[in-house]
Image 1 (tube, rainbow, N blue to C red):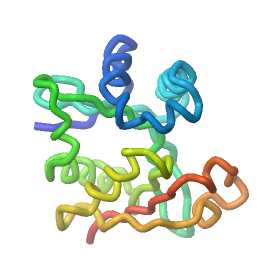
Image 2: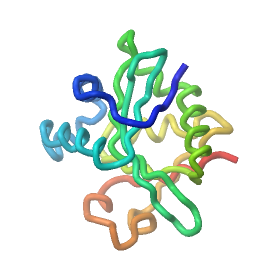
Image 3: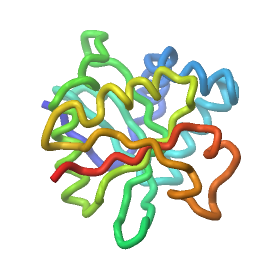
Image 4: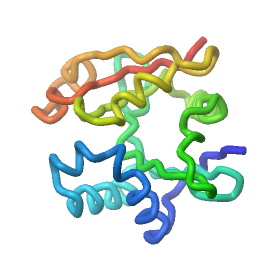
Length: 172
């Protein structure tokens, strides 16, 4: 059973997750550097709202988010996810309906309309967002690519404008 808890994992667990995610975040590692990305992701867990994914008692991922107000709705800006393997070394947990169901239930409970995901346009993470989110009915709608300016307005940066920005609404 997958659960999402508030708070960050310890540093050793984070480092394990980063190493397991290495292939999926390769484009970002090349863009900013391996060490800089590792430290940036770790720092985000202490400066934004952090959470940890636990599957059958084993930490499989972590990340952080920020709240965004878009019009009248509260959106979760899914920043800095670091997604690793389960206890058997598999990444399949991320592609399951359980992952989408648990995540959607948690975000509904927190009052979000959906989430914003920013992905490096050259990254396998972008392909994962496109293939996973919305693939199971009733949890999340299919991701829609939007402009950074439509989401972030004056806070848009060149890095955000050069990335792929997904808006993923909770289903229903």
